[in-house]
Image (cartoon, rainbow, N blue to C red; front, side):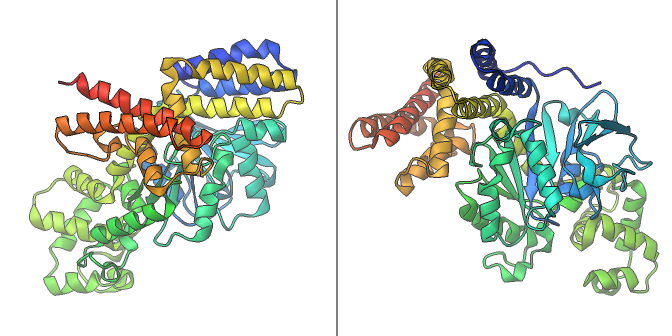
Length: 504
């Protein structure tokens, strides 16, 4: 059994009422699409983890879930789309293309089996139900790597993200509402193309700062000496590269954060054990010359003769890589009596996972109601547009407009405006684009105003000043499309001013 669905937020409930009210007034095909929209509105927020093959997506999924359950080695399961969702009993369901389902147990290590024992070409996707609390309000979709997919994997990805409907309805009610995009050191042009084209995973809306963030994975593999300003510090180099990649990928993503997925997975999913901590303590006791030698390369680390068994060193390398070993040894040097638990926490801190989770919370979880409602409205709009009945299209359009005129629907208007500006559908000067997109970067008023950490009176005055400027711009000099966005931004500034005024 799955857990009861969380109660919908007010915006999702409003869109659900709209769909329920319209369903008896539209064609059976459109009504079927509305039924699917209603089902997804009542489900947890769905985030698709996407990226190039071998970018470390599944390792990051394990870290986020807090359990090593997704296969990370190349095999038949990494060619399949896997949905991780909350359930009261841990189980796997293999869903076939003909709709059949086959229940399987996890393997002895608690992972999805490397071989499912079925004809993979006949598999649509895999549903993994876990009792992990993190999945109660967030369903994570692990997708095959982009760029080197076989045709069958592409078809499976599109079919799952689109649902079991006709092509038009499938694109209209696509599965995931948000995207976590995984990149490595170099952002390539086709990474940008892939992110822009990942509309199949974002309910027909292009990825943007409202519904997409990116992570720079494998940050520990960056050669710090090649990054200007890093001063030889690997993590500082990763931060610099992440900022550059954020500039490249904006406005497709809200931010790019560095992370060391392997370190995060080992520290968070139970992979790092007390015996591993003991092995690290033995390494710390080696003489300085030996320590420096074995830390020069992975080959030397596992083959150089020393008092620590090769098996122990091999296991540590597989779980932490050299960077993680160095981090752990530095922690032991600073505090020789450090416990295994404290050492695990040190490794987790060094992985960058907490920052990624924080961004997931601020960009996705805190806005889940608005993101889901906006995605649902995009689906409803697409379903109506595909209808062959002009009266039906008008009826749906009018109902949406009535919904959006309500004061409580401002967040939906803002999300729509952000999407229009981020995708380039409404062209604006670059400085205004950056200003608008700040509303999608964080729920914090200071960050939305671009004045993080500034005194309260300064925030209050700036919010009121910009509210007036955008109201004037909407009335004088803006194109009709720009004017629509400007009115929304004006109200966003005014609401921030009201919020800040109430804090006096």
